[in-house]
Image (cartoon, rainbow, N blue to C red):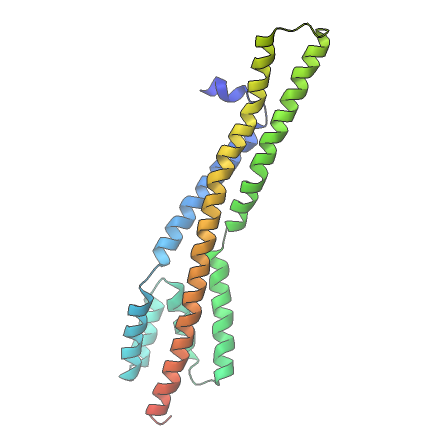
Length: 207
């Protein structure tokens, strides 16, 4: 197998490196997104119950103990509930943007790998084809068809390798991008509900 890998030429090495980086990012993002996932409606219901019972400190502690971005956003909202509506919206918007950037961490790397590995493979194939035709010229055009076919399939190895890395990488990139977009929408809706809840609760308690 390793000898088969070497037949693809020196550009197989950067393609291999890209595959290792891609797998590392994919596994890390899967773990991170799984770790921060929570039941947002259920979490919001618990926070709502605590705020209605005027247990704001307990609600804040619950948010701070949660590893989810929603918990961190809620903690900002609870800590700044006395500010004006516009100020609360700005604070939560900045907090939400920060959390989205954290969720998008390393995704640009996946996009880069997904775009450059086919090009590396194509470059390797072009280089291999150039060498094959140079060999034909050296032999004055007298070359065995089997030899020529062997040179061509070896040159095509890098294209196959590049596509084998790029396709799953781009699939993973778009999957994670979709997950992040879903998180962003959920966080925005949850933040809006929290602001409305706190305003209604403060009015109910005459604050």
